Length: 235
Image (cartoon, rainbow, N blue to C red; front, side, top):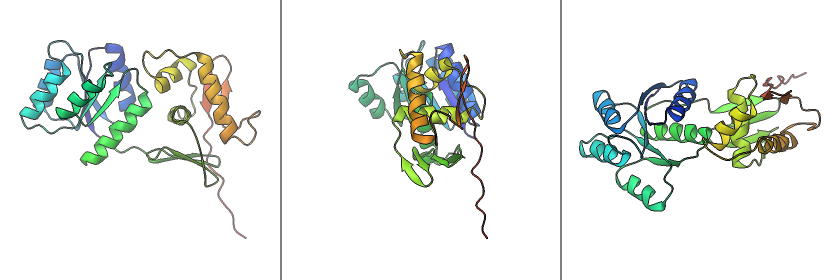
């Protein structure tokens, strides 16, 4: 379990990030402005800081500069609506470890969090492999195997599959999937989710017309039946 500080003034985004990071097993604290975020880091250095740039009291650039000037080497993942190359370069020059632009995929951000924690040797690894039926998902490598043969998925198809896996068999609404996979604030239609589900079924199901694993919950969304592969028997 890693200790993660989110410095984000948008309460909805902060809540969503906290919820997903806690599901992944991390201990999470939230600061709603830059000055509070800086004080929280200095009071008890976390394993990772998820830092918005556009913050009240003290913007993310100043927070990051203050940390590095004090010799605090905590890993920092910048999270911001700014997408200009100059903003990214400035963040990296000040000592950021990675950069995610809003709207963002929650799953992409979780993957980056895990990668930063691994590189920093600060723990927080999540399960590297998931499986159902004859499908194996190597989460860290973003690859999917079917009967041992790699299946090509687009980035969004992969994120959608992992999102369903993380629900552990419970129903995921289209609205939840749109936020989880395409990101907060992204303009996505529900039929986009349906189209990607159809592609996952085509690539992963034995009979896409009668799926065994990627199931429709009528008027509610989708769920994954995550039964394990049958054990091989020998005679």
